[in-house]
Length: 388
Image (tube, rainbow, N blue to C red):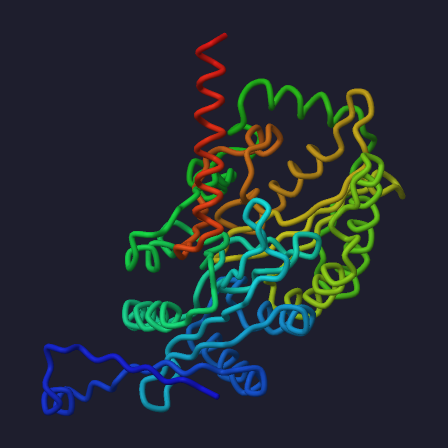
């Protein structure tokens, strides 16, 4: 069953609306049985808006639904003016989501809500909507979400500051967590007409040059075909899994759902140049591989795999550095390491931005219990600290 909500500027009379030829914006909710029809609209809008954001693109969303749709309850919200679709958004209901010891019913915007072991960890998440309709669409979307009683916790996962603000502004009850994303500003280096390595700090430059000398002649390769991309992807998965399993961790590709999702994305995104797969070899031996998504002309460093560190050899650092150089040559604006504050990301970056994770919790008893427990714990810790 679909629900339709409408919005119209209340300062205009009906006659004025007609004379200005302004059509009412309405949203329609597409449940499971009508998802194929909604995806057809998504594909058309994606093309119409010349969308350059991967996480809200038709190939990403439709592929995610193919692999995760049977696990994650979901709906699609369309914004329409008359017969024209101007905005579209995926709503998902989280599975195995917790806050402290309590299970919570979470509602997410975009491809999120998966169990931790299967999560794609979406970043640069976004709602696909034409610019002139953004404010109205966001407002109607928020009104619809608030009209539902089932969810405990509304979540925004990996939105930019600007895009998250479109939702946060409607309700003071949001808790916002901002996470640094370090990146190399390729456009700035290009404008200054300098070499990539020159933008790093002295110690990083010295370490890179010393590391490079520990390898014989290195060969780099950027996938130009799906067959080539699949070959690089297989090496990436092998190296990634070997590294993490050696440390007693399962590795992200232990999830067959996750692995198959990305394998299929290769066929979707390599031909449209929205994904890059990069490989570095020394002779016949693969040193490491990187998978990037091309999002608004930024190379998002999504996943990688490399040989283990050995003595003074740092294969992971060298592979990322060579991939940055390749992205510089290809004319991308930035090489973005995504969220996380590791030493590796910092030393290979020249600047940083912020990505947002936000929660809007309803006044449930479980949250009051958690707040009370945390308050007691904090008071006890402070008291113990003063006594000592």
